[in-house]
Amino acid sequence: MPRQNPLSISRPGSRLALAVALTALQALTASAGVLSGREFQNLIAGGPEGTTIVFQGGTDKIFYSPSLKNRLRQSSELGPEFLKQKILQSTVTEGTFIGATIEGGKWRTISGIAGIATDADSGHGILTLLQTFPEDTSIKAFQKRDRLYAVVIVEDAPGGVVCRRSQWEHLFALKGEPRLTTVPCDFTVGNAVTPTAPR
Image 1: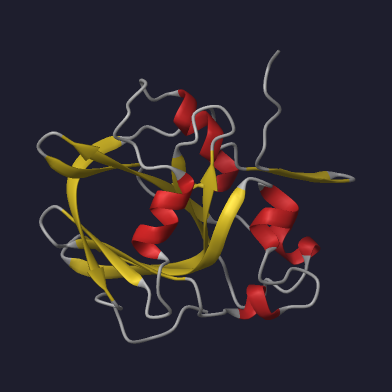
Image 2: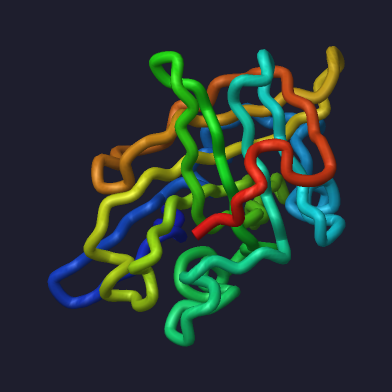
């Protein structure tokens, strides 16, 4: 039986589809080394100080914090469990993120909400990153604006820990599964991206 798209929000006259977490996992070959949702949670969300994922080369980083709250997580309509309640029920933890990458010789930062979900069939964990804006205080406001998203999966491979990650893509242009690239990655306790909290 086909699996329903787990990452979608429907409202009359509007549809926001994210189809990222489980479809990305379906694209993976079976691997015992892929971290489960709980293992992923313990790796990057085990303490209040958060964790920075540093991808090979050090010019691409993502800081994840389970304790910081941005405008969306503080709003009464959306709240701190927005991903679990409105988008993907298999989310085991969520928080905020700040991503930094070099484009055209300049640093570019992206911030928003993030959640680690567990695939119902394989148990594999996936980190979904979704850009947010200060205006995201209601479902209606959230739906009407395009935003960037990316996903990350961590695998304990024979040659060391690697991350399978997608590029930042526009949500409204989403078609099918995100393409994942495998790169070596390291994990650092605390914010090694920027001292500024996400919006």
